[in-house]
Length: 268
Ligand code: PGA
Image (cartoon, rainbow, N blue to C red; front, top):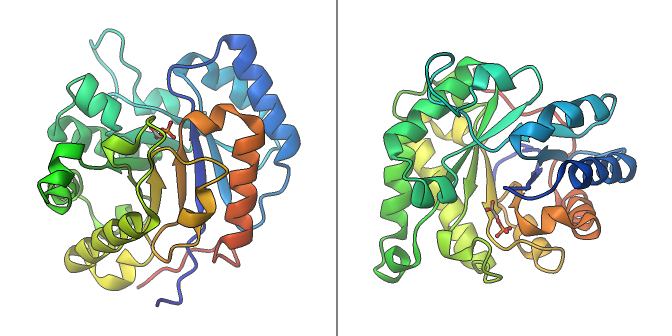
């Protein structure tokens, strides 16, 4: 067991939900209820158009903001895209490689890698999603698939950039299905991811990388994940639209989190 205190990150991915009014109400409720986070980080990740008005309303709050996606390049003729450079003044985090984008919108490993670079280049902390399909797990290929996704995304990363990376292990079959992975499976994959990073970047650096679990996390099952040694928070979809549930998940992270300070260990 390492002596590194990784600050758990609870991030709420609102996906393509909420009207403008609903989004403002939700952000306002979180601002009022999550006034001190005590050793946990919490990020709201609303749809693009609500980012700026919510950023204005979150001033002075410990809540961070994130975006659900970014373009592969910073500026140019890419109709409909939003670049990391545009998001950077308002967001700390950006999700890259969410399975809905990989599998429903045809995002390739190469595009995910380019988005990761765009995020880092513009000072955003990427939340890189990795995870296998059900068929891939059934065939015993889960680790192989996750390794492929990691290899392609992290191939050109330098050690210093790795410190800003958050990885979200999200088995595709667990997302939005009400059927989460077992804590044992989540822990096994998170430990595998950390080992894999350790082999490439050194184990002391691997110990600083935060690995979240995502996929049907709710207030009832979150504790099972948040107490695992290699899981450092959760990427929450559906339950992040429910104030009671999301606040309870943050409370559990605070209670069960191992972090005693917000200082991540650095190796030299
Ligand atoms: P879910 O979504 O919590 O609704 O399963 C998680 C995610 O897609 O990040």
